[in-house]
Length: 70
Image (cartoon, rainbow, N blue to C red; front, side, top):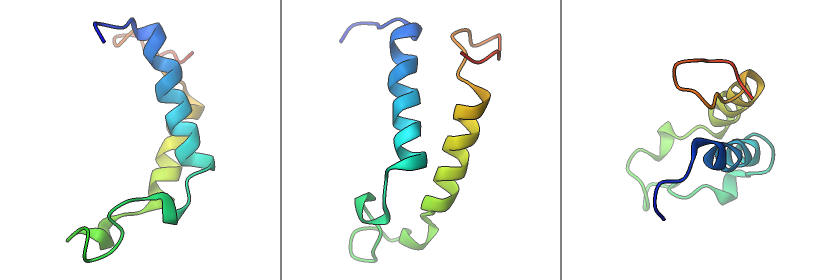
């Protein structure tokens, strides 16, 4: 609610990415069959894990103009 500070949001984003990279299993992903999603074959947990790990490894900056991760 309101406008949270970037420093308050970064841990939530980092935790979400870490969960994708390490904890989420295929059964946890919604829309992975033809009945629930017409593009279900385009879903890739493997790619989502790779991208999540890359972002975590590079860090998430508190300043959108300074890409130094924290």
